Image 1 (tube, rainbow, N blue to C red):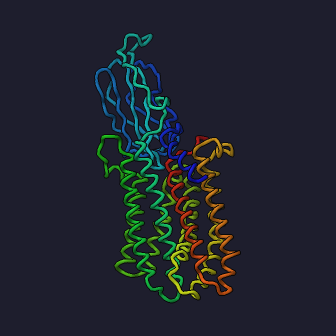
Image 2 (image 1 turned 180 degrees about the vertical axis):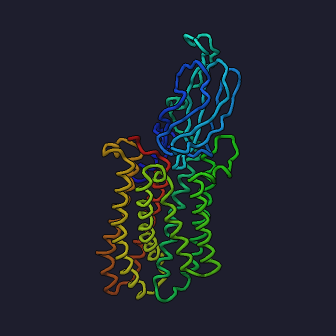
Length: 418
């Protein structure tokens, strides 16, 4: 079910008509006929948007003009641009912006300047009709961004988050033991390299995703936005964790930086744009619990301990995982309640079906945990070797990777509008 739903959602990145943020109103409005030049363009969106990555072009029979846009100081959902006096003509406004969740949206609308006392628009120079947008979506309300970039970004996001959570959870196991485990910190260094590298690749893919086709990424503008700063901070924290584990050989500072990167990840994606006062703390707690759970499973799957130490670690990790599962489930329900407008949206939208896929993955992981706790651990306590439990946790870790990839796609599929 997870793989089928993920495939449908990947296709949905290109086909879904709902958007991460959409234009609620504009001034001038679509189709307005004005007796004088408006002097200003004002765009109001459904969610906060990022002015540094916004672009507005006005097209008329006389040519094209770029309108510098700025954020409204009183409303983070509003963009404002000053325009010079316009001659009598019909104008098309093409806009593109990036919503607070880090995803580009675009659209266009038209208005006409008729001149004082004009009765109708017959005397005004008219633009030729614009080409119909791909997919048959309304011209003034469509999702943007190259489909290939969204797909690559989604996969890298899932891989990066998986590696970061396993790395942070592994370090929790490293510091929780009274005596160092030979080779454990070396494994942490490899994990840190993977996490920081994948996070860096995801940042590059995100820059590609928010940059219009054919344009060069504007790094200065990107890093003045909320999503850009969060991605840069997350990469920096992962690199600091790599330095602490690899060069300083200090697991506690490495863990501190890794957990900070996990917490910062709560401010990425939909949680940054939809009710962030609740959704960001819920997501951060969700990810922290996942790190505890996933790191413990990775620790047992690696099997770096002797039999007696493995038994002790398995009992401790099983107790931690039980609490982590409860937190993951409750915070996941909380986020779904925020992002989905109703129960019917769970079944009728691509986003809702992906949530179902994640829930199915969680159920599978819970089944793994129940099997390990009720069947394999008693056999381990009775003196049986750790081979069976180690093999089971490796399969569990593989399922965790699959669910992480689904979560990466989920971040690039917009929730249904309320």
